Image (cartoon, rainbow, N blue to C red; front, side, top):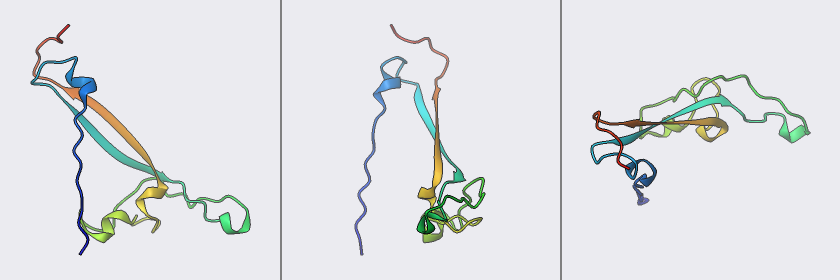
Length: 93
């Protein structure tokens, strides 16, 4: 059985500008597949998969495989969105 190490990182970029009651929310979305299916013949061809859809539930092996194209999640373009959520207090200066 393999051991898994989890590292939590605090984002000081937002915490230094806002009161203690604010926090950053990051959303990760995986877009179109960028796997080159013709790389072995020297060409370039993608399958046209527009968005990653997991085959299984979070935590299972199927969660990393796309149900639409069968590729691993790493072949899909990663898009991150960061949003600062606060309780309405003014930023500190």
